[in-house]
Image (cartoon, rainbow, N blue to C red):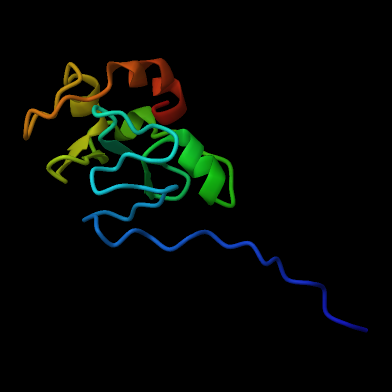
Length: 122
């Protein structure tokens, strides 16, 4: 009897340009991706399901082999957001209170991301 076929799909390698484990689709040096590439799309968010950062929920869907799990409320004080402009991390709580501006370097974040916060933060 032959062995069952092994899946040939595997996630892409982590992007070594960043100080955190990050994965996405056509990610540029400032964490813009194939799905969101405007001048203010410069954040990557950590997902609780895999402890990896992704530029957006669509990048997670396209590259992860599992369903996404948002960052839990009880962990909002842990590093969970990367600024693609200065490459520093911040807690989810600090990001959510940032008024769409990096508290470290002043880079502008896309205010439209607030419409998707439920996909990233529980």
